Amino acid sequence: MSAGQHDHDAPLPETVLRVKALESLLVEKGLVDPAALDVLIDTYETKVGPRNGARVVARAWADPAYRRRLLEDASAAIADMGFCGRQGEDMVVVENTDRVHNMVVCTLCSCYPWPVLGLPPVWYKSAPYRARAVADPRGVLAEFGVTLGDDVEIRVWDSTAEVRYLVLPQRPADTDGWSEERLAELVTRDSMIGVGLPARPPQAA
Amino acid sequence: MNGAHDLGGMHGFGPIEAEPDEPVFHAEWERRAFALTLAMGAHGAWNIDMSRYARERMAPGAYLATSYYEHWLHGLELLLVEKGFLTRQEIDRRMAEIAAQEAQEA
Image (cartoon, rainbow over all chains, first blue to last red; front, side, top):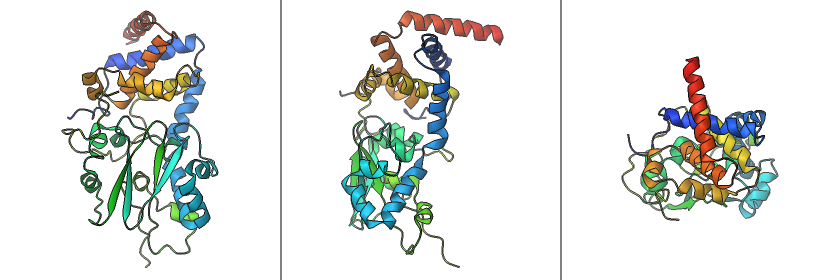
């Protein structure tokens, strides 16, 4: 096992004990409310997730005026759809084209746009991704099964605590006239991080 | 600050391992550490940069050998002590009490 890949392992009993002790003391002092903790957990475990981002992308695909606003002032355009809050205060949307492919990393920690994508997956937080996304983006994309032409420029955006990025992937072909709801089903989480592409529309029978 | 957290461009970490199922949390203690960090952050005694700096002050070897929420826990505990919400002695004592209680129940 390599360093930074410990997330699946049982932590030291001391870690579990430490968390219990902190919660017990903070509750006792009236600094946190256990019910409020449960609400926070439920929100990020079941309510906030990449379906939010998929709706933003689908709307940008379907509505050119919204796309322009999203690229000019992503924070406001995303807040218009009701997605705002922690770790998404200042958003920048970067658009993929035939010539440019964008991907997002946070080399220093794991900054990620929570309101539109939820909490980051383990691999995004892991040392291998954080180390290599900036040094060998083509190699990283290949590991995710994405191969781009040599003429496509790859731009890697290193998130910070202040600015969080969302990739606007290219709209798949053969989706003319599709509703936003249908388009949103093609938007994958990985395509909004830039390590994947949107799903293709199912072939017409 | 330069340190073990500054991973961009470093070699030797191996392949990227995506999980097939991707649970949001992998254990109950991760849920509680996450929520405690957010709830205490809401008191406004520190900002996001101070939280990050607290996590980055983990010893480099320990940082690389531990998981994301262990980094969060380290940062939270450090800030709670530095800002005077809790003392190390209180935390150690409570950990010993809970351990003794759990041993009795087992």
